[in-house]
Length: 145
Image 1 (spheres, helix red, strand yellow):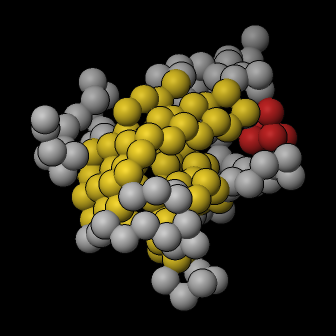
Image 2 (image 1 turned 45 degrees about the vertical axis):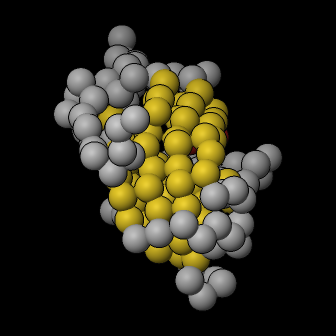
């Protein structure tokens, strides 16, 4: 079996595998594919395989972030779900789903959308640090006709 740390590239030339002290992660799937035209009814879905040397659900989590208009990244304001998912086991495969309707309505997000997948670790209980990132994955907007 190929090591998760080997690193390989998708057809669009993005790194889809990464290693960090205490963690490895591999982006298995991303739908829709980068470059696809998305609408408010689209749903971004990513599946990530991970291995943690010292699992702790209070420390390790995955989240989807969008580029912000004013720079940096941010989660989508959607009160119906937590924007991050805790990694409770030492290894596993997890799928994150982000309906785009809330993103479509969030004027603080850059257009067209660029999405990142972050593997974060909380060190002090309140602030987290990205240990690995995947992306950016750019999506196209419908043309205005």
